Amino acid sequence: MLTTLGLDTAAETVYRTMLMHPQAGVAELAVHLEVPEGDVRDALDMLSELALVRMSAEDAGRLRAVSPDIGMEILMARQQAELAAQQQRVEASRAAAAQLISEYSELRPATRHPEVEQLVGLDQIRDRLTGLTREVSEELLTFAPGGPQTADNMAASRPLNGDLLGRGVRMRTLYLDSVRTDRATVEHARWLTSLGGQVRTVPALPTRLILMDRKTALISVSSDDTAAGAVVLTGQGTLTALHALFETTWAGAQPLGDTVPVDRHGLTGQQATVVRLLAEGHTDETIAKRLGVSPRTARRIASELMERLEARSRFEAGVRAVQRGWLPARA
Image (cartoon, rainbow, N blue to C red; front, side):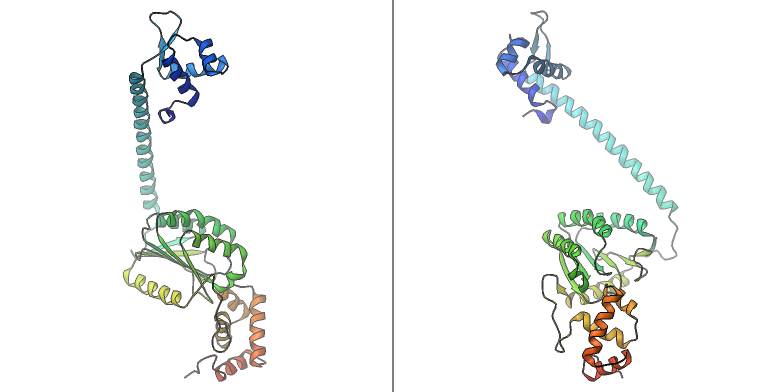
């Protein structure tokens, strides 16, 4: 009951017993409590340190408990002093942190565009993202390309995502369809949805993108290597365009728990994307990166589609895809 005031259970029990039996010594207290005398002496040491027992003026050598009203005042005063000291330490830490942030900001290279901040390297990206997400209060929207997410990325994002969802922030995340076959990524996505997040998938995504409260965007500078660098954007016109892109992509995406639909030609979104990329002359490696799959998987999908089209070359596959209505005819 008094543990919040710094008194452990054993010491509190001895103190209460001394109030009920003011003449009891160590031996008598041990008998009353049915504990070893050593335990009673340890409790008396704590009570003495807290000034809850003092030497009797009438009975030399005997300790007596101070009255509860005085004892509680002593404990409350002690706790208030500890809280004041803790507050001073917090203020000192806050001042030190503010000084560090100020010094770091002065060292950060200035950009010629106030609405664009450049970030180089994964460490810098993660540090900046951590700071930005602490300021999010309403909404976080994410393009997560690259297919199955790495263990490091998922581990690094969990504390941030858990904090955001715990604060009631609305989260919508778009993954590639290829994550549906990766158990670890699917489990991570289900963890997000269990906390209130929403997850959908699409055949392809342009790049990694994070939109925060319709005020800030973090976007990778390279779709091939999202860890190489990123930019933080705050220009209203740019943000409006990026939000429109997200909403359009989200509207055509499928919830993770749903079966991926096929179009009237019997093609999944992933297959339709491969047909388009084949017709545009992209290599297996490029197609693999766009879909978030291995080059081997990209070659297998391409081969299956060419077989369905009865095409011997990729050029012929493009022509036959147009003839069958899989692709719009070029003007």
